[in-house]
Image 1 (tube, helix red, strand yellow):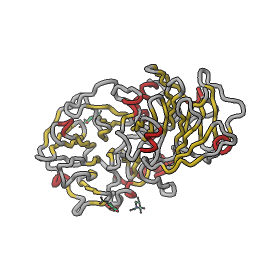
Image 2 (image 1 turned 120 degrees about the vertical axis):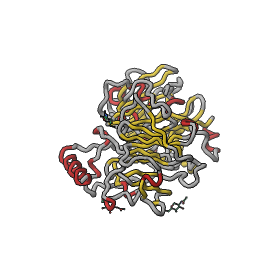
Image 3 (image 1 turned 90 degrees about the horizontal axis):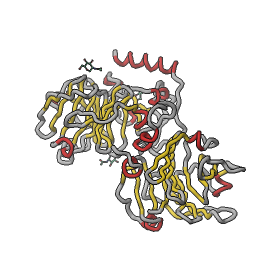
Length: 441
Ligand SMILES: *[C@@H]1O[C@H](CO)[C@@H](O)[C@H](O)[C@H]1NC(C)=O
Ligand SMILES: *[C@@H]1O[C@H](CO)[C@@H](O)[C@H](O)[C@H]1NC(C)=O
Ligand SMILES: *[C@@H]1O[C@H](CO)[C@@H](O)[C@H](O)[C@H]1NC(C)=O
């Protein structure tokens, strides 16, 4: 029945929705699969404000958002069929959706460590390395004694946050703490919490999703501090056109969605670009605006930006736009020019940076680093060798304190270009939101 209902809904959506997917390239850990030839996958658009069924973070650190028989991997990109990643989560079981999911990450619980658990009606599925464990699916009561069927959400809470290793289960307005070691179930009263339809732990914080909104909560007490709920599309998805009444600066500081590009100018001001918006930091002073209003010709979704001789050089696909730094950002005559003519490279590129008072621009394209001398004519890219420290890079910048490579929510700081070129391992990951943009939560 449920499946039939779902199919009807999706068919309606197919007729009504003007499906929109950003043009950016997918940078999740797994290659994107085009399921558009399959029935309804192409029309599930998370920017329409949908309620997710379940969220879990995989062993590679990618959040998977489940909706119906589909999964959205990471913070942007299209839905894929869940059974492409977890083959038993399909229609044979007449289930069609996931109630709750989490990855058990408790190294001292050898049996379940790093297993992904999925709850579907009365059953629980346990996957290790994308393979269903022998004997699964099992009845929930046989694996998690006392935990009810037909759950709404679940999230793991390690002992640093919950005093012992717990799973928090949600159903309606009931909430339980399940101690993984003792199997003791403790019913909690979380009065200020909305009913969660999915929940996950992300960068050490706990988020409850309800409708297309979310609230951050304390896993011990269920208290929600600060201005919540907020719109999930502002912080956990890459969507362009809504929520104009929210505080752009705070959103851009605190968003978990990856950046498109970042640059530091000669005065040490930092610019960070994300989809249709950008953030400019002059010391502690923050400014945010839409890309379209400040860099009209470019519109949005830039690939790479670097500042050179008082101008922002902005690369998008196979074109280079050049703007004078300072208000207003006037576009230089004769631009955009082709990337091939400007830098001798074919697009798309992932990141570009230039260090203060230098005239060599470093361009990252996949796992190759190129150098282009801006003073040379014609400009010829020189391969600086492979750049295999990172699988991919979203943005990079070189400021007074060295080079920062930005990947997803994290950045990696090298004291200088030479240190980066000599590095054999990545330095400690720091958070873009709190450590780079000063987000206070
Ligand atoms: C996934 O499910 C769809 C139907 O929803 C089916 O057509 C497809 O063959 C399944 N794929 C795998 C890998 O099981
Ligand atoms: C995971 O599975 C793949 C193939 O499906 C295999 O090559 C790999 O060794 C497995 N990894 C672990 C840790 O079991
Ligand atoms: C929360 O769940 C309870 C059932 O457990 C239900 O009675 C209540 O209406 C729900 N609240 C909302 C806002 O959906």
